[in-house]
Image (cartoon, rainbow, N blue to C red; front, side):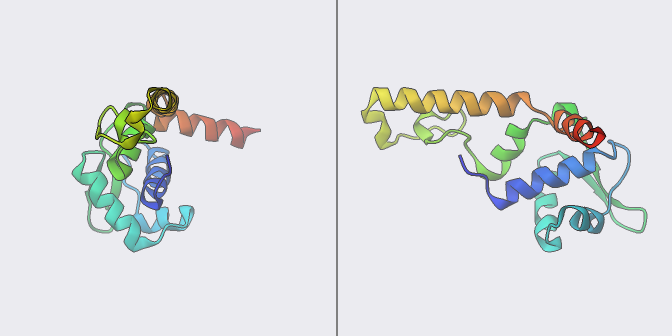
Length: 142
């Protein structure tokens, strides 16, 4: 599995927004500055996140973006799937994006790729934005 730049920036932006809670709008320009994300790219990402129900937006001087869900209810897996599709290394072992692939000709190889999928998806499904915020706060306190 390889994350696209969109997934990476989406995760960074969501973590940034999540640190302010679900009530406080955060300006896109502030996120861009803190996380070094190109503005136009982040605007595209925000539209996708908004369409999927992860963020809300408001225009104007008191506007910005904020989470529409609690950070503990948003897993890393959800966001990566939204932008990149399957977490599995090949589609023939994907739970959500199954397609037949040549790897199916080797049951042993297919089993290895299932293990890879299970490990990656297990970690990413079990890790939420809230978990990342806690880890970052813990590291900053040291």
